[in-house]
Amino acid sequence: MPGSAAAWLEQRGGTLAAALALLVLVAGVAYSLALGPGPRFPDEIEYLRLAENLASGAGLSLDGVRPTAFRPPGYPAALTPVVALGGGPVAARVLNFALLAGAMGLAWLALRDRGHPLAAVLAPALMAGYPVLFYTAGTLYPQTLALFGVMALVLLIGVKPPSLRLAALAGLLAGALTLTVPTLVFLVPVAVAWLAARAPVGRRLAVGALCLLVAGGSIGAWSVRNAGAVGSPVFVSTNSGYNLVLGNAERTTPNAGVNADVRREIAPAARLGEVERDVYLRDRALGWVVENPGRAARLYALKVLNYFNYRNDLNTSTRASTLADVALALSYGGLMLIVLVRLALAGARRAPLSAFEALLIAVYALSALATAVAFTRIRFRVPFDPLLAMLAALALERALECLRPKQRSTS
Image (cartoon, rainbow, N blue to C red; front, side):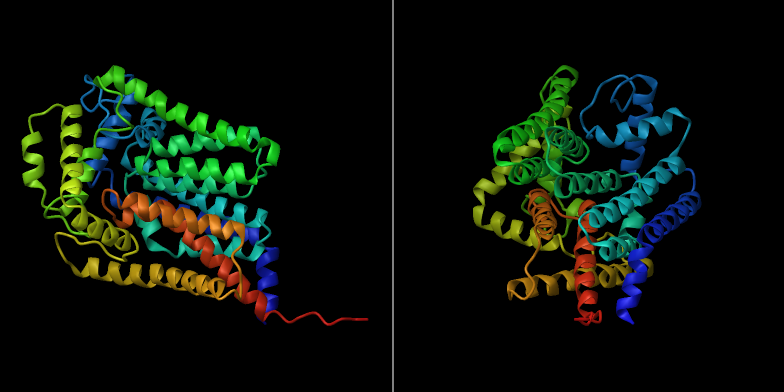
């Protein structure tokens, strides 16, 4: 019976969630070993080099001599203890899988504390069955670290009772997420607004202001570091100009991403310094938007839609990539279908959204709008896809509750 099965899952929820997380971690360790001891992508080499120089005391530097702000500091800082202990790419990948397993645990904890014991089991199961999370954890990119941070922030602001201490923790976490992936800066006002709205009337201003102050202070401290290290108070990193050009140029397309043909835009910046190059490229991108407002608006809208794509344009097409596209289309499409049905029912006023569901939907939608300012890729969506899994789990729980046999009155 569906009802008895749901009750069985609820009773063993913690054990099942832990078992799923452990399974993902063990599989991740095996996958990390199978990938071998070397990095596979150029960006991975840079992140490891930055972590090595941080561990050696040379600061955030690519060559161990000159300080840089080209990469956000969050992920290299997270890798530094691994490197300091003698770990290489394999150990760094294992750290990513540990973060993924931890995020599954946070999903269980958040839904359990919100009074959804069945959804608390279903969400980690859906995360475990979503292959892009596993694949991304096997790469040395900051998205899995950001995924863990997003889940922790959702737990703090969406589940725990608002307080000054929690506001400070949420602000610190939102700031750290921005220093890991700069587009996540939109989470700062989300955290401030949500905590202030949930706080007692007399403490709303204090809770919101403290969260904003702590988040702004952590981001501002890094800008002060950049002013001294590279001569300019750069906001987080100096690769924002390049990313903006990739997504806002004459020959780019909504799904081109890093494959966009922007040679003409970046060629004049080849001999500029790090900060000057960033400023030049940012001005080129913004200049194109101002000169082509209609085309830029249409491109932005298409990039927002591309955020929900199941595939990215690649330089090569292989059987392996085709199979991966099919797997992602089925897994992501399944989650989206469940959530869209849930939204349709809410729109028809047959099943109103809870405040927590509204938070998850708002964060997911805002992530699309923020990411599309530059360009959208599946990898950039990874920190937020677990929110989709949580929404789908809540929808499935509601459906299963409807199938449970109603208790008969004994009076």
